[in-house]
Length: 122
View 1 (cartoon, one colour):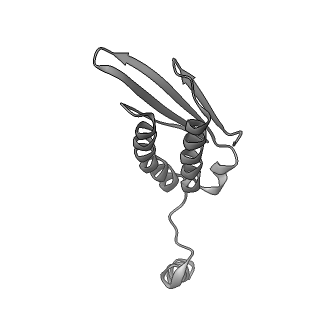
View 2 (cartoon, rainbow, N blue to C red):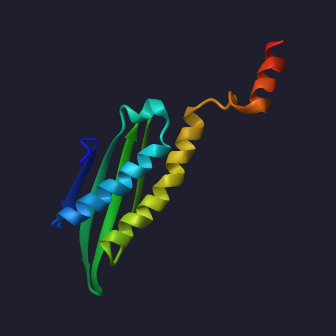
């Protein structure tokens, strides 16, 4: 397992299969981060069992610490695996937005990027 990801259970005994699944989903989120953030990123996954009158629910919260920002998302549902998937889908656009703000938007690839640089330099 990755040392950057910390998985904890609150009122819930986390089994090995759930840990592996959560670890895999969060590691896949790291690919959307910029290169400078991948070196110092850390993530915390909180799995919580919430007892209600109508039955048990599971609440999942993912907190990702990147340079200069903390990205969080949480959701609850009847199935713990489904809750992990939902939170994964919620946090992915936030990470992409972070990458867009962290990286300059001057294009350095492709024909148009070279053309724009020449026009600006000349």
